[in-house]
Picture 1 (tube, rainbow, N blue to C red):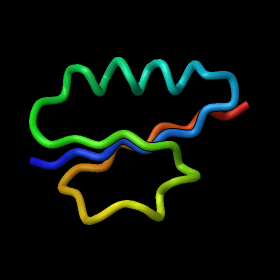
Picture 2 (cartoon, rainbow, N blue to C red):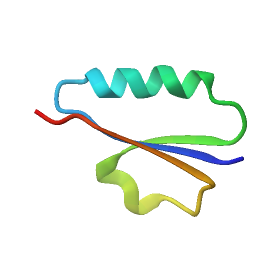
Picture 3 (cartoon, rainbow, N blue to C red):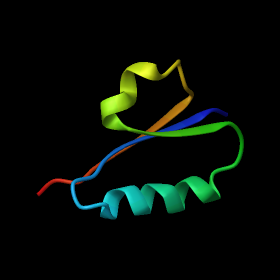
Picture 4 (cartoon, one colour):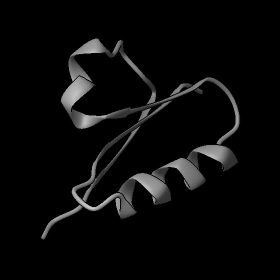
Length: 53
């Protein structure tokens, strides 16, 4: 399975959580900030985490 994590982080906390989750995902995986989302291809699973403040 291909996994994509897209995150948005104002303080850096969400980025840290996403990076930690990324370590535990097996298979093909990509992690990118939401501002770079135009660079993605079709993935099987998308995990989107946003920091709202």
